[in-house]
Length: 468
Image (cartoon, rainbow, N blue to C red):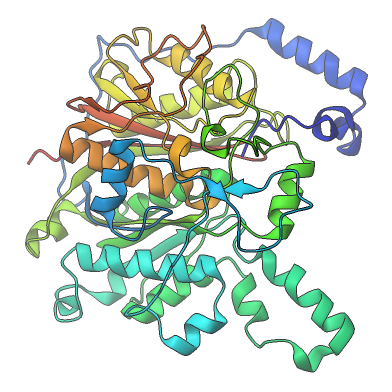
């Protein structure tokens, strides 16, 4: 959730708010530009080394999704391949006074079979989405209740994050507290508010006793969790980790806050064309929701229990821009650093990457900053395809990276890339192949998935087909 276009965020002197005058800020920016520091490309003459130890190689064995296209991974990707549009009017609450009245809203969700009825009534949506997606991923990994004895529960972890999950709890319960008193509050106020609860509820449901916690880095959350999960495995702390993100920000307080921040498209007359990454007429992003969760294991552990191996996680990276609370650097330096470090961690040269699932939220500044970063890392982009899942499902904030990781994994296994829809008038400086409006067949060699969060958080992860 970067590069908001609001005059509030651009003119209200955040530099002054942070203790720096606008004049000093301008001087600092000019000085930084004069330095012209660039992250040097990885030399093709020194082939990077991929992890070979089966105890440290990390594979994906399960996927679970809750999305605007339903809760089935295959159906979710089929709709993406079709270029189906999941954006429509918000009908969950009255939006008649809101300048933005549409989103990638989930309809007809049910946790039946995964969440007890009483608990489903009490839990906030992001928790329910996370539980359903997490349990489905666990089952997809061949770990139904009759198979769970195959794992050491003390070496199985959960790292599932959220960005805005629980935000509605305060806004919904403060009026109750003020008008009716403390005794009318639900005892689930705190449970629904704290960001660790998705991981905690999943671990309780599945009986997993390894580390269970959440990471919250705005829109970089899911990738950050995936990266942390893999590191637990590589450092010998875990055999298996459930990782990803869940979020449900389509609530009045979040919608209103993003509107006044200038982040959201206001294309109410034609919402299905509102999310248009890289298009010259983009006017902000479209809010979405859902959950995307993976089961990750050491190769040794997966092979020992004869698990279904979907693909291999090669590596990742996280870093921070240290630049501005809402805008990325125009040259994309923080992003390019993160991509480079991901490739180094993965043992991958830039020439091996031929698919990028972009962050690409349809923001005026952020879309091109990401493109600038990509161009600075990859000297030859002619063989690289790049697409934007958010063009169809909107931006689900903390869940975005998880939903996009699943799209990447399905691209690897099917050989088909979903389109970026609403590519009507693409920025001339884009230059890369955006898989515009129609799916393309493409054998993925190495894929990276980018996520960048409000505040300056960057996270990138790399995947490939599994080769023994």
